[in-house]
Length: 311
Image (cartoon, rainbow, N blue to C red; front, side):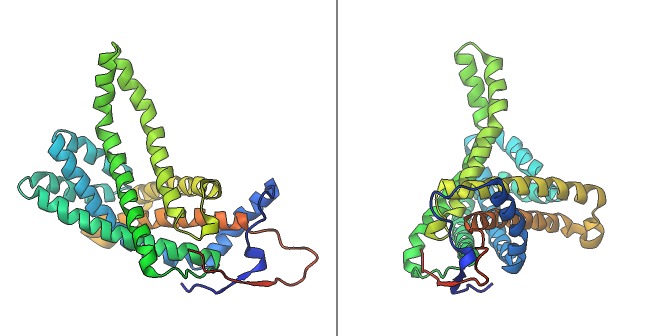
């Protein structure tokens, strides 16, 4: 996972305003898995999985604890919604610590405090690794001093955790709010039905914001909604597809219970998170390939352009 200091000419950014033909999109899509292999992206996904686990579990515990303080009856529905997303045995592995957190009423504020610090610290580490992976994809050296990166990474980490908690609140708290608003306007049943329909587009928008925040940690030339959107759509599609296929495999074919015993749920969860990070990196790599111009047919050799230390 080394960062190269030179950028081949065929990896430079496409000129501004250059139209992208269907052939260019298909070529970028075809080059993406090759670049993922050549750039050792699976290793980056493994590193991201480590920090994602360290950040995700405390964040979920804090979210469940805070919602339990506001509305204890809503925690059961929240835990059910969270574990429903996890494949196979991993749902039960998540359910146990989350339910244990709801039962510890006396130490809830200590759990919220320590969990928040742990989640922010691990999320910062996750973003730092994601930033290095993005620069490695672009073959650009990250020359920004660590002190200049720190405040950006901390703010981005807090933003990611807020998006995660907002998604959880949207699953649990907005349903009763929709019913209350429906009763206020004289449409009690229609309000709840409307929220059932709108809930998933809202969550999809939150996931899109999360992906764009991650992609914004890359070099300056790779930032922006327009540049990040194609890879973000591909990342979301790959993650949903991989999750569905892996859940089917783990449920119908997998032998994790026989191999890992009581640890099967944790192993399945780790693999699922690894697939999620690999999907994110695949989307980011697709953006790189989209910005890569077609090689000049007249030129037999690729020129080498010095890398810039973009922040």
